[in-house]
Length: 271
Image (cartoon, rainbow, N blue to C red; front, side, top):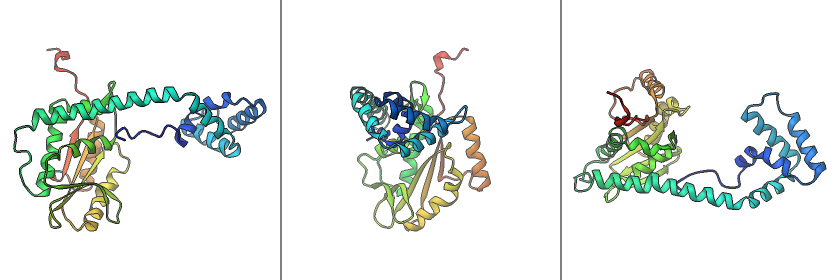
């Protein structure tokens, strides 16, 4: 559940693996018809999107291809289990092991869980994550094999884990009529704070910052909210800065920028 990957059998996987399925169709006549239909809908140098569209059109014309797709997946079930187990191990390492170490190393024996209002308490936890990510190698959680994993869900999971042993009610993806907000942190009906986590690479970031949280606040009868934005390089940072300036909301406490750019190890930096 934590990995949030596509299902083993899915439309997306079907379209992506269509070129592998066609040659595996045992019926020679059908294979030729499917191949001809598919190739006629491709440009000379097709993009991935164009290939997927051609595959979708071909499957609609020859729905029997679905049977061969399912058989292809069944024949490769062992590979699927192997990949799935690897992803579970990676997720356990990424979240369970590393987050546990983070909490034990930096929170044990502190007054991190002392009472405060929902806004200040939530903001403190976000700044805690920001400090760990930026200054204590926490950014590594967002990388596998040196490549960034740009998923808002990862930051949401990390944030939720910081609320262990708290008296606050922390609800995820609460929907009160205007769409789900990432988190609502509350202590009774009169103390509520909404929290949204965004990636700088999100194409709708400006729109979200301008309209989304205000709508959530109205739906949840609160004026307190926090927006945390994760970026992975300088260009993404400059994008955020530009958006905040355009919306005239730069420098506000309720907007927290978190730098997850890969850092070179100090031992590798020449003096």
